[in-house]
Structure formats: structure tokens, C-alpha cells
View 1: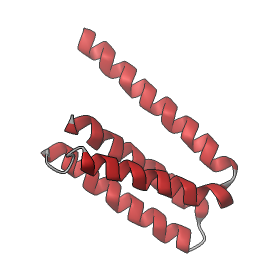
View 2 (view 1 turned 90 degrees about the horizontal axis):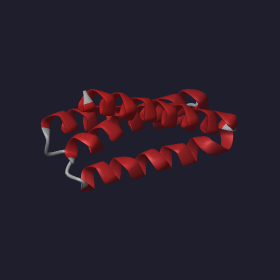
View 3 (view 1 turned 180 degrees about the vertical axis):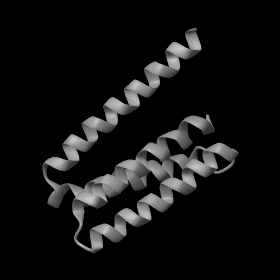
Length: 103
């Protein structure tokens, strides 16, 4: 029971953080897209430093995060900033999973 409650709490927190980030990043897509991508890059770097690329599940999450982040950069270069923000947020979710699974 305790583990189930903890898992539900962690999931709820992740969703709340993601919603908050989406709201903050969507408020001004022109100025925030680059900062959002940079924050995601920093999170990906932390995931690699934590050894996320060594555990199988964490490695898969990290690969997915990197792919999403690459797409986010392509969308930004194409001028589709809102799509870029959405993709970088998704990349963060996978990076967070990789960080959690690596510890």
C-alpha cells in the first residue's frame, strides 16, 4: 500500500510540474523556447552524469528523450515554437524517468 501511494504521489507531482512548466513556457513562446530547450539539455546532461545510460530502462528513456529533443530543435529552426515547446517538455518527462530509474 505504501509503495502504491508513493507511486501515485510521485506521478501526480510529475504531472503538476509538467503542467506548470507548460503554462510558464507557453506564456511567451518566442522568448521561452530557447530557454526551455536549454533547460531540457541540462536535464539530459544530468541524466547522463547520473549513469542513466547504464541501466536498461533508464537508457531507453534517455534515448527517447534525446530523440524528442532533436525534434524540438528541428521544430524551433522551422519556426514552430509551440511544437518545439511541446516536444522539449515531452523530452523532459523521459529525462526525468531516466533520472529516476538510474538511482
